[in-house]
Length: 392
Image (cartoon, rainbow, N blue to C red; front, side, top):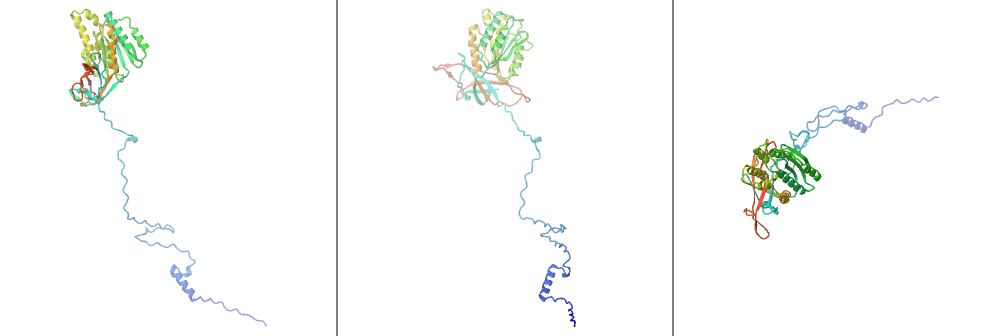
């Protein structure tokens, strides 16, 4: 007998009450029906909020929130850059040109022309056009010289030429290695024998070349005018050693024009050595010749006085070493007085200058020797200068 076993029909398993309750709760939380659990979930829609969320946007699964406004005050704004700038970043500066007058002053004793040392700024009273000026500084200089020997070389008299040779030779012996000298002669024209040099051999050769004059004319004013014009091209203080009779015959330049040129030429001091003094002394007897000689010597003295120089008319050759010793003493030892003029106008006018020595109380300075005896002295300086023009 065959036993046939009949299988019981399949019945769904009953779910317990606790499991059903859990599934219901999970469905409520996900807001998805249980039957759709296998469906791909959609991204949630962001809720709009005016306070802490930005506008709706589809950025995949990321939404960038808007930053909350800070309650702190905003930082101060940066200073604005200047509107106008220099082209290319260039740097410019302002320069004010305050005029300064440097006045060369020599103070020498009348007896032996010895330089008077030891003076201070308070001892110098400077009057410009009659107005007292405040002296800023005073210093003593001992510097090499830059000079032109301007020699009259004309066939008018052997004695004049001989005096010129002796004078130029005496000055040549006083030269120092650091001095620069030029040699020029004049008759009808001006001749440059040697340009500025400190080679004494070259200077000696120039003087030795003066053998035979060609003309009798002496155009002094033209020669001095040209020499002054050449000197303006050289910086610093210059000196002109003018050796001649002082006569002028056929110059194109008049006396008034040469005097104006001297006034307008800065930093030039003229020293003059008159020739023919002994001849004129021996032949003195009045007349036109003596008048011409006196006028010529007066012109030489005027040239020197206008520039703060010295003028000599030696009778004998033995006087020349002392004369040039005084010139060297005046050139190499002098005071430089600096002041700013109260009249600062740049009008090109001529300013008259007068220098007086005073003591601490403003009275005229008294100078005494070692024995207490009063000594007369001279203050040698330019009588004025020409103010600058606006274009200078």
